[in-house]
Image 1 (spheres, helix red, strand yellow):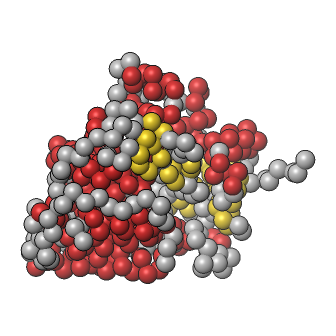
Image 2 (cartoon, protein in one colour):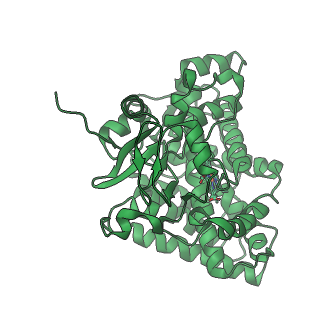
Image 3 (tube, protein in one colour):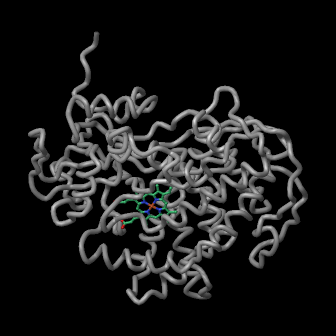
Length: 443
Ligand code: HEM
């Protein structure tokens, strides 16, 4: 038998096929902190214990977010072209900031997101959910990750951030390319240019939207600072929420216990959402902590100053007694949104989008079921996500909701909705997404 690797290979096929089994083995062998390799040659620690994650995240003097402390990077051992570097390199946004700088940036984001009432998020989500379902409901089958889950949170965010039709279309397409790893440098540039154009537009004509509120905030962010916070907030918001939507639908359809409890009305969509947050947290092994001094854990393991520590939420949840609470207990004490000063500022958004998005789907297509060759995990060291979720259902007529950008558009030629559907079958993921986006924007 081949000897076991001394560290968890978060980039390996074994991890992507069953991350929970790898986590369990590592915790059994090493205890609450185990060694990992994020990418060949890039080493880190995973903290897989609820109390340690909580304590370390609440001790920002010892455990910093600023990745310029990363020992291997400072000593030149990290290749610039390693794909994980993009997720770890320091940027001037709140995720990588500590202390007063973090508090100042966080206040802007928290105050501005907090001005959107949850009922408004629900209404906007419902409208976009209906539009997306209209695009495939007559077909009797769909692939819910690319045709629904990925687009829904982005459409909602474009709406509440007050993006124009042009900016919205560019944000959707560039983030789609970034997710699919297509021409990522170009896509990243396009994403940032689109958000920079949104800031210029709000200077000229502020509105009742999050971008304008961030611009007007008393903290007085420069345009550069604002751009950096927009880049992370839209990016950090869209992908995990997409993964929560697809994960919840999958749990409701494919987990026998949950399906039966849901059919028997013993649990609702809210409990299924929390089940995903406990079992498959959409953000996992992320963000990264960098200790400013050597840290010794109970097993004797020593983490040296500047060595990256990944927050292993899934491993920590699974290591709790009984593998975490029962689905029917409605317990939200999970770590899926982080803990401490960096805790996610948008849980209300995430729950509302997932709740309404899954509700719209299950109400309009009540006999939804997973199709042959069903769900597969997306290979990713920092997320637990489905790559695809093929489903079938009894075809249903569209509601005929017209996408808002097609209704009124002063800056471009309006297009009437003709009931035409996006040509999305038998296409590569990126062209499928682009054709859906083009349809949404009436092109
Ligand atoms: C299911 C959906 C979501 C999950 C699971 C999630 C999870 C997380 C986690 C784990 C963190 C890091 C916490 C830490 O550093 O300790 C975080 C931070 C953050 N999230 Fe979320 N998030 C979600 C949705 C959103 C949405 C919808 C938005 C924006 C509208 C958002 C914006 C942010 C921002 C700006 C941060 C950085 C906070 C900071 O560093 O202080 N997230 N989120």
